[in-house]
Length: 506
Image (tube, rainbow, N blue to C red):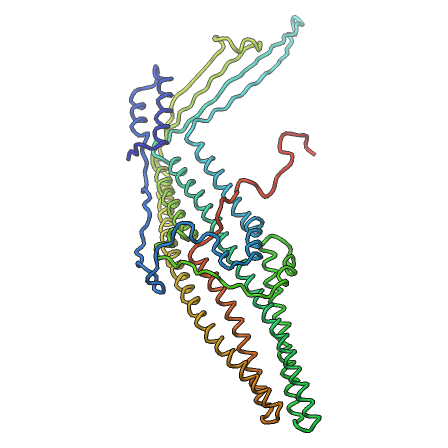
């Protein structure tokens, strides 16, 4: 039960030694020996980190090496897009979910201080003065009396079975869990900003391409109308050419709507009005493409890199500590109380030794009957620990699933892009030849219409594939657990109050 070498135990023994020395003349040696023997005692299970059984490599990256420290930091900069970098920096600094996560860290740290205060004596001081006047009816003499009092009251609950220390241990794990929660929030935030940025650029590029295509299709419709007027084409061909251009033009409002929604989402993510970045995003319709690959790492990396996995592990450690906290309540508790008081009819009398009065002594509280409430609290804590254990292993499996899906999605999308690029080159040539032959009157308009429709669909699919490559890259960065580098300041509150001290009430 004894845990030698801990700073808390050594500090506890020193404080108990001072208390015993102060009251050694009247305090029994038997309770002293008992207190000293139990000074390092703790109940409940000691936490041991779980070690999930993991494969040596990912199924879709069998020859990868472990990720080096810092290798995934600021992974989005591999796009080489200064605008994206600026938006992510602004989001990290101003996002409201991040601000709330920072506040939770401050809350957890303050809670730890509250719990840790239970290891130390609590001392309160007080002073009073009273004045009285009475008269004797027989003599008619008025009697005035004054009484001044001052003193200190002290209490100290000895943490014999480690209830407070287990609570402090749980609070420590709570602080660490809050820090991992902030990293998880940052990871999600960075991914959301990057994904909406890429999607906005994709919608803008597709709308721009549709506008160019409409211009070409209207030229084809004009050529068809000229041939119709010359008697070389039918009215049906003119109607089909005009309808095809209008059909392509009808895609533009849908793409513009989707662009605006993605741009508005970015505005909110960076803590500004929804339309704050619309003009900035319209300056370029280039879809970002990753310039360098991300290291896939090995399955064991998710235990080190993924903040949500580390968060689940810290919550498991916290729930384990709370079992010991609940079990300690089953055992007796010992408190030391004392008081020092002085009184006098004049203020100057308060310092006289003859006016001093003091008392001290221990008190013991033993749980005798509580209808199973305390034992049930232990069972509740054990059940919560089992839930945390399952949640940790589930988080590991989800993380591995994310990595495998991202690896497959990115690799397969790159293969699809190559096939689409080949199709686009051939459709462009087919469309060029179809227009030449149609202009010479050697083919029907149906061949031109089919070639232009196929070219538009394939080029639009190619743009969508570019977007998907970028979003699969972003998904891999999130799945691997990469995040922003540098120190995040969590000390500054979101709301700074003005007047805090005593003042006249309004």
